[in-house]
Length: 255
Ligand SMILES: *C/C=C(C)/C=C/C=C(C)/C=C/C1=C(C)CCCC1(C)C
View (cartoon, rainbow, N blue to C red):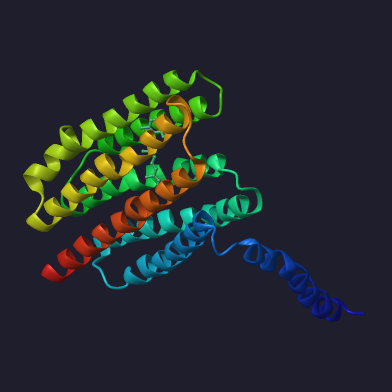
């Protein structure tokens, strides 16, 4: 048989052979498993948001396109992690912590870059803003991971993580980024910037609270904790992207 003919038979067989695996995940989802359902809903919302952000790059001025691409990358990376987390939860009922941290390690620096990109679209900002936000992010996540995974005392990991987060908050409120936004940004960008930093303050607080109740205050109910994390991601990833999309459209049409 020629290679082409062989391929004709092998390809459909290979695709069919994966079907039971795909179907199995759906089969195992029970209609009263609200955590599993929330994983499903949010993974689909993340897929839809990705398509939306990427397609809308067509609509905005050139200098805003990168911000929308980065928003789409955040929801894309999160969507793929949600597929895995959903399966782990449905199959085992376990909390897929390691997937969350890998997701955070990629998406949180991308979210931080958004502050830099939004300011750069309107004025000159130094690369220092970018680096300080990246360093704050790494300290926050590596501290949290070491504590959560048992490489470090749980409380020490938490404290290091909090220091990283505090550094980020300082930069966006009172540091160079905050000053640039207050002095040089047009009204629409100022209001978007201000909503973005309140998301980083209040929306992000959910994760250290989860850590605190889950590991330091005697353990939390994992089902509730996962639902809370999942809802937090809707705010911190999808809504955050929508705010940027909104200001990008407004600023593109104003010119
Ligand atoms: C899309 C995912 C996001 C925005 C995840 C954010 C995660 C955090 C803000 C985690 C923060 C933590 C601390 C501030 C203290 C130590 C433990 C962490 C890592 C949970």
